[in-house]
Figure 1 (tube, rainbow, N blue to C red):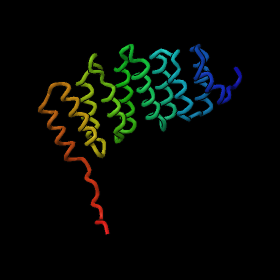
Figure 2 (cartoon, rainbow, N blue to C red):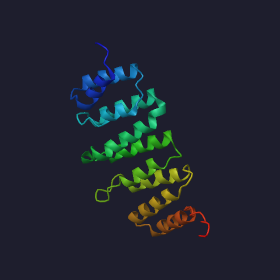
Figure 3 (cartoon, rainbow, N blue to C red):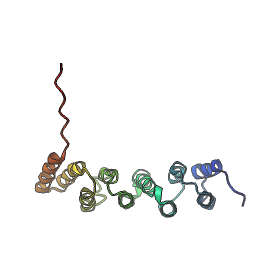
Figure 4 (cartoon, helix red, strand yellow):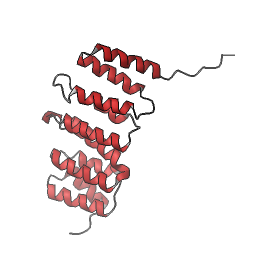
Length: 185
């Protein structure tokens, strides 16, 4: 097989419907050390790929280029949350938010995005899983008050008023105060 250019790889990721063709382009991208997450976003949004195939590509990409693993996991989580939600793949979204948090534990976005993907009517992903995940994040994120606010909301949805009030207090205690401004002259 002839070597694909980066534009040909992009085109296959974006519009190919044939798994083998996409896989070949992916292999070539890895061989050519293409570590631009923008190229792989096209792959992740290719709606002809099944969830298992997306997982395969995402895991391989994160293993091959650890410096973009956070971005790869966040994109996979977003894709599963948005495009595969009709198949109740919120569990997969949560799995990849967890992996993103493992890659960058001090960044609040994976925790916040995971909390946002809760589907109240379907009760997915399970509230207890989200709560445990956000509690984990509150221990690693430098300014956890944003996670405390979300924890308060999740506990409220779960009907646990005591824990909801507790996390509301923690959020208020940790919220940064605006700096004192000098008086007008």
